[in-house]
Length: 82
Image 1 (tube, rainbow, N blue to C red):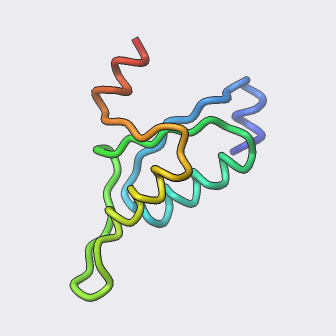
Image 2: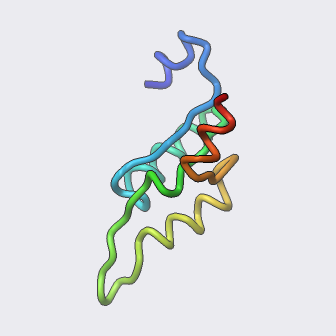
């Protein structure tokens, strides 16, 4: 994926997805390590909740605030794309 993004000159990535604390976070960290600027769309991302282990979505949102270049809503992303 990184090779294809670089071939196309893409440097900024917008992420969303089903498993905030697993897939989305893993891709975010990898892309940041590779030098991409990554924004996560908080209302286009979901996560699991478990009665004992807690809220995976909220845990991921906290991590995104530390790592992602931006944590935005869908409306904010659309506004910035115009």
